[in-house]
Structures are given as C-alpha cells and as structure tokens.
Length: 128
Image (cartoon, rainbow, N blue to C red; front, side, top):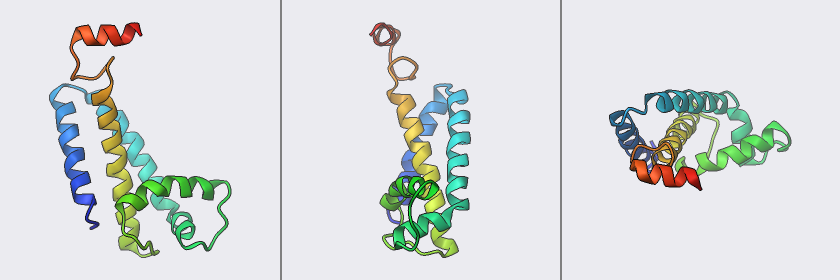
C-alpha cells in the first residue's frame, strides 16, 4: 500500500463521516456511484494507464484521457507503475478514494448547500 494512500483513506472517511452526520446522504450516494464508476473504468483501461507511464503506446483519444486521469493516480500511487495486479489495485483504490475525498470536500466547502454554513451565509452566497 502506498504511503500516501493510508492518510487519503483516513481523511476521506473522516469527511464522509461529517457528511453522514449532517444528513447529506443523497450527495454521498451519487458521488460514490460516480467515483466507483470512474475507478472501475480506470481499472478496466489499466493497460492504457500503464502504457502512458512507460511510453509504450501513443496517447491520443482515450489514451490521452487516461494520461490526464492517471496524473492524480501517480501522486498517490507508487513511483514506478507496472502492469502487475497489485499496482492496478493500488491505482484503482487511489483513484476511488481520491475522487471520494474530492467529492466530500467539495460538498463541505459549498456555501449554498454545504452543511457547515449558517442559513444567513447560505442566503448571502446564493445572492451572489
């Protein structure tokens, strides 16, 4: 397990715990569906992602999209990406929790619908 994956998972679960405590169930369900779908897509196209890191394939079309998406994986995954099953799961789990963390953080920081803002602050943000 990569060194940065453990704090990422812990921070993700903490943010999602705050959202659960404030009743943001619909947001959690939809963001988990999207992040799981994207992580599954990354795992199914792992050869494109690993080829982008090793430089063995041209990166056009879907390959270019995989390269852009794999930049986030590279930040939390191991430095050398191989095509082994362990590295594929590392990349998939890092992508899954990275996307879940991003979705939870965005909801908490949202001034119009986020649970951490008072009604006055929500009204002022909505008026902008």
